[in-house]
Length: 106
Image (cartoon, rainbow, N blue to C red):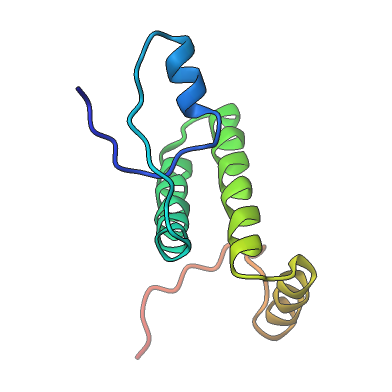
């Protein structure tokens, strides 16, 4: 029996059952959920990094977006505050449009 030990989307156990599997699940505490969400964000970012085709990247970015929505909710973060902070950082530090790659600093 494979062991996953990771946060999954809400309908995954139902899908497993529909496919003849018997999922073993539990409900995380709020503290555990916060930790697992951040782990999931890293997991999805790694999967996006490994994506070789546009469709795969879009799928992984959709997963990242879904995780971010849950992060905003559990941490009581307002999306507009994130957007405002992103604009401020872009103004102060720039974006990534020029493709600058810092090799070193002397």
